[in-house]
Length: 74
Image (cartoon, rainbow, N blue to C red; front, side, top):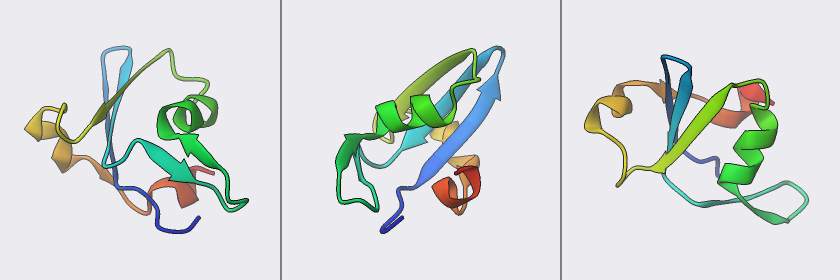
């Protein structure tokens, strides 16, 4: 996936909190999709997702960086 987003995540209670540096994602096919929709499909087994931008997230979440983000999950 070209130019992957930065993702930070933590599991808190029954909520998977995910923070990202962008709102959209360009797939290998060239399609532009909302990153929230993409993550909901990718992480369908999670009971509840809370997806935030870096501006919305608590600073503490930046300690939980996922790298390389989507390549390992896909």
